[in-house]
Length: 399
Image (cartoon, rainbow, N blue to C red):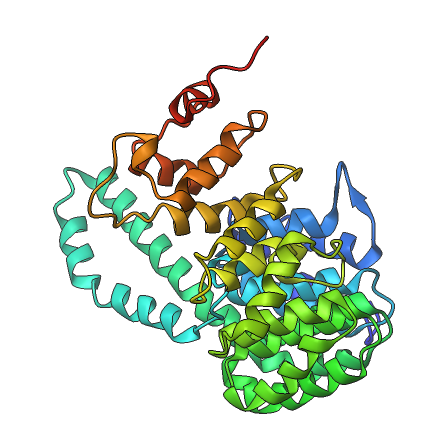
């Protein structure tokens, strides 16, 4: 390997002694080399396989932190293909899944607090291990405790490793390729401790960026960092000729505590007539509908007929995957779990609730998110489509 190789030193890491999310991490070097070369590994791109192993469903593992220096170097190497995906993986190593932190941003103190709490339970676990029925069970319990501790330690370690690389990675906001620039803007959103540096960079990035969806990622990032001083610069994009910038500005403003009619108008418009998905919008996998709904449901206008109709319009003619987050937001808003009294009939529902249930009943059977179905069950509303049609008085569909 040459001195300039981003994978220099890869074989010096004791991968076989480390664990990723599915066991021994001895396959990580092969995945990293495949990412570097831009090759497929069987049915999937190498980055997908690596991602699944080191950040499975948001869980960071013991080996994850050891991949970060190599990922950083690959992100900075112009010879590496699809660098935006490498930067995306760095974001996942730092915070896990972004949907767990949207629309409120990431608070690194929470992972650190969980680790402190777990370490404080060491005595209780020691007692639990000592009470094992035999040596075998004792070793199993020791292994479980060690695994819990290693996993809890992995999150803060990974976050810190990526945070320390931000000064170098931030320079990629001016790189060739809108997808790469947008990925870096997304990455900066998750590091409030770096905000004094990243906010001026992101503000300039949004102003100079020629790709609307990439600039929209920068606006969302500014909102997630939560600094009120950016409100004037973010607000001016509410009047942008580009749909992406209008809804992203509105999303950011709700995060910054601004929920006036201009903001809610932009969000309802984005739900009723969403921009096309784009590779340059990195948050929530580019799900404009879900992001707009997350913002709108946290405003005073959330339960107005106009807002509800906009969310229903967003759901119309969408695939199950496209409507997941929007449906979750809508159903949990309209059918809250803390209701004092649940009506026994359709007639006992509010007009807003009846509007939503009719919408579902009048369409072909579909797969709705588990959160949506849970909300209906809490209100004793049928979830099978035929039963739902009977519930609203529409009767079964003709065969």
